[in-house]
Image (cartoon, rainbow, N blue to C red; front, side, top):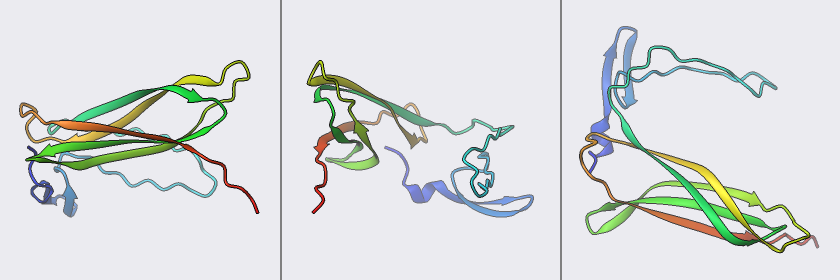
Length: 144
């Protein structure tokens, strides 16, 4: 079981001042500003130390027999076992538009790359997660 989040928030005395961060002093933090009408920033971060790691979970889902030409609200919820219950650790949602296909009414759709990260203090300790998939059709709103 991971440590409590309060144990992970620390105050570090750095050469340029005091920093209260969630994590460790080995993290790199940079400030980045997007200017008006600028839709892309390309930045390279140098000299990052990988002293403390975490776990990463990448979820891909294949939806079966989905009606073509419809919109779907789709979500992935990750819960972790904590004693006798589960607590929510992450949620990702999106809206999918299934292309209409005149030749078939149903289609299979792959939804990839829902990525979750979890801080970790001991990679040798097992953790138990539950993945919950939520998907339903969105009905068009009628104009009066």
